[in-house]
View 1 (spheres, helix red, strand yellow):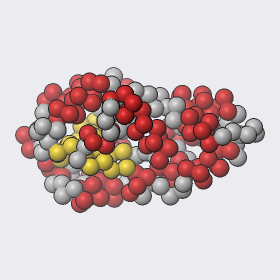
View 2 (cartoon, one colour):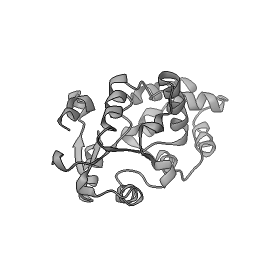
View 3 (cartoon, rainbow, N blue to C red):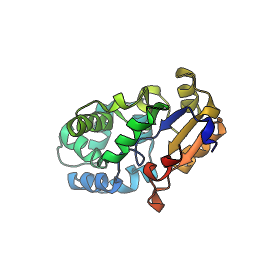
View 4 (cartoon, helix red, strand yellow):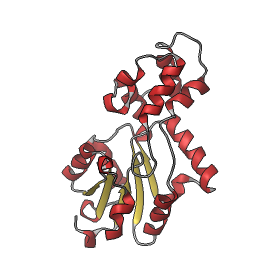
Length: 209
């Protein structure tokens, strides 16, 4: 990575800014009666249903209807949403402060594979915790459910670069997925892989900028 050329930074969300624990969603779904949820619906083994939700190709209501097919008891939209969002943990204050500091010297963006249910949840939680909008941290936030593509689709990286007039060689993309990092490199972006298995985080690396 050539740090002297960096003018723009694109952050991933899950695992990079917000902490996640997908096991919590599996556990909460099983409490609702979805006994094989972890096998079929975790981020490790994504199904078409989750993929379609993240691309915005099905609505939250359609997603909930599919979930209900696997649950024998009657459950509300709120119960499904709460279980589905249980994986969303906290926004460490130090990471938010780092992004705010980076804004002084770089154009800052977000590129996230996410869905409308999760977006509504963490957006609300962030305002409660910090008193301002999460999206205000960035010049522009790009979400897969709004764009119709998700990482590592090359189209989503090209979409961000085109719509924000970014030069790839001057743009650093940060993600915790090696697959997403390799895709970003293939379109010319500078990259930084946050290896969560080694307990890395953006505070570890961004002191070099």
